[in-house]
Image (cartoon, rainbow, N blue to C red; front, side, top):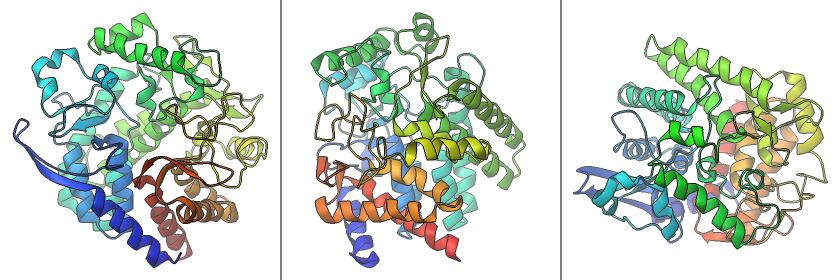
Length: 427
């Protein structure tokens, strides 16, 4: 498939999944792209950020702006933005997702509203990407105050210990919903996912619902307090992006975000890194117990520029390039292939084996810029082959390339951002 054919296919997919309209109950216009037209029809937080990267790679920065403006159009006064917005479509695909909204909404639950959960806070980098492509200062001036309120909300409400690490209160806040490292937290020991795991995970959301998503109350009860590596890596990267965006506008708060970034990176190294196994692990509880399960997030912090180079290299060499863990024909599998939970096939319990494009996109830039150009390009070629074999699917078998999950799923379009990065490096 030529690059032009690939661009045309991605462009067509996004246009087919794109919706716009007006919510009378919210008094707001909306414009976003569904991750999948039937399986995921709502506006999702980090999916919208992914779409901003894809649209920018397609030279459609103005459309990316509309998506990001729509994402923040229901932002609470305190700065919170939920992981899903139900625009004129208030019934979740899974009825248990009702527990992901506040009971205090009452009758408003049946109108346009946001969920009460977070998702990985990728939006500062998304805004930065769009700004760098458009050089639109007015857009940046519009978005920066909203971003500041959002990241301040996270720091105030989810850095429970004040040491720079953010806790998630539901597996679904990680964006990696059924990640095997959460099994230990909910006392699931069967390894292969089943209905018992479903009940245990939904029970977490139900308890949050009963607690009206009061963060301090949930923290005190301690039934699901996880500092997840992926979430905190993205948080650190976006604090640095906030520092840079503030500097661009001469905002005096720039140093606040740089100080938070420094603290978060220091805590990631201190709390999450395990020298013996050369991996970064999720931790849970108030005593920060490491959950030693090998998923791709064990090497996520390697992309942070202030993580020592020797640590980054060791993590990648020990795990990323290990044929018994993550080095497979179609990378990157969502759990090490030698883990008991590994299942490469379609399942309700996603993120427990198959390859997800997010991982390739996330690691590509670091590999490309740190001496692993061949390996970085392999991630691009793998995605192109997966699209050729199975089309635009939610996830793929890491050995055969067979597509699974949602159809007409947009994330594979991130390959265009990866291609653009390689072109920019060659200039």
